[in-house]
Length: 118
Length: 107
Image (cartoon, each protein chain N blue to C red):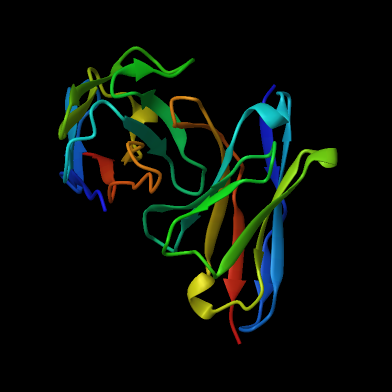
C-alpha cells in the first residue's frame, strides 16, 4: 500500500526554525517526485515546490523561493521541508504529495499543521 | 502566470442531482488539467488527471472534459459522500496552479 506519512503538528514562535518530514512507503521511492502544498486556514491549495528524490533536484514556486528549503534523505525514503525563520503567515497545513508522470498528485500525506504564534 | 478560475464558488444540490463544475485557464493548457476532492479536515484526493482520465478507484459517476482553456468536472448522480470542495489544477507549467475551489453543499 502506497503511503506518505508526515510528521506531527508543530507550534513555533516567529523567527524560529522548523523541519517537517514526509516518509514514503509501499512504492519505489526514487521513481516519483514529491510536491509540497500549502493550505492556509480556510483557504485553497498552493504548490510550494517539487523535489526529485533521485538527485535532490528542486523546483520552487517563486512565491516560496528563498523562504523554504526542500531536501531528501534517500536512505530512509524521507523528504523534508525546512524554514530557517518562521513568520506568523506560515501558519498553515502542509501536505506532501506524490507526483505521477502525468503531473498529477495521486497520493497525499495526512498533512502537518504548523502554527506560528508569539 | 496561468490563472485558474472555477465557477461557481459554491453550489447547493440534492442527492442524485447532476452537478457540473467549471474551470477556466487564463491561457491554453491543452489537456494538462487535474481535479481533486477535499473533505473537511482531510487531504485532497485525485479524481481525474489529464482532463478526462479517471484515477484508479474513483467512481464512474465522476467525469472530466475539456481542452485548451475550458474544462468541466461532472458528477452524474450526486451521492452523500460527494459533498466536499473540488479543486482544479493545471500542470501545463511547473507552477501547477490550483483553482480557488468549489464547495458542494447539501440543498
